[in-house]
Image (cartoon, rainbow, N blue to C red; front, side, top):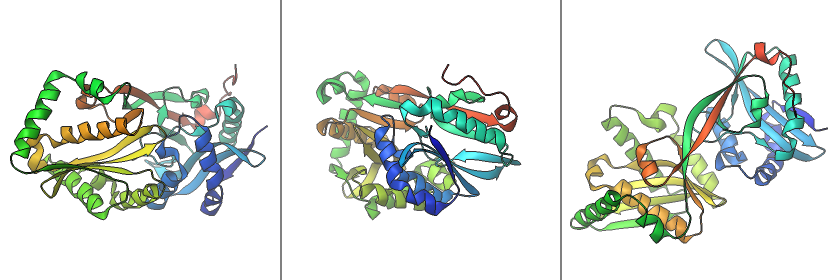
Length: 334
């Protein structure tokens, strides 16, 4: 029977990082957002309250982890997943063969604990085994992904005719003014990080909104996680320069056979030239060239993503209160 360890100490959480990383490698559905570097960096910048990390062990082998923290939110003591708010996939890492044995233990722990009022766990997989817990499973913001099958030429010819025509026309118009250069960078380049933060803010300010970086005060986090992932060869900046000026770029995290497109930014003064479309064209061509099998747009259902062939990825949010957790547990493994 797996042993449940509830971790409340950051030092202990850092001690298990190698076992945590090995578990992520063993779970086929893991993404960059469930890896220890992302989770620990998130906690460093945004963590509050008390760590409450549920981990299950078979002797020295970590077989499941649900990284949470307990904090006060809207008058209640809430258990929240580490990474919430700015992470796109947060399905806890549960070794597929152990879900039915560990979840009854979690149910019993929650039933016996009186120091929490609500679990609000977001960005879960549509088929999350956490549905076995007695709570409400709600629809959450979708993600989307472009399958990269066949070759790039066939992929591009399958895109809408007006998209292909507009890319050609806008590129010709822009090149009549200045050269267009596509660049790929694997380092946490300070110029590109500055450009990402500044252009992202400028574009949203033009719309009268603050944008995700400003709203979450996440610029320091972005710089930190960029360095962390770059050191693991898990960072790609795709950039378009117009002359010498950066006018479009996207920060991505390649992991396994997928490139996760985390955040993009466009110069609002040059939107009319369609550099965002040019950037995606070149970035997806790069993905084909280096053998990736998918381009993941992460969160959001913007129309343009589906013109590029994206398929929706449904997600769920679990709401569990002490009232429901204290009721009779569901028939696990039935």
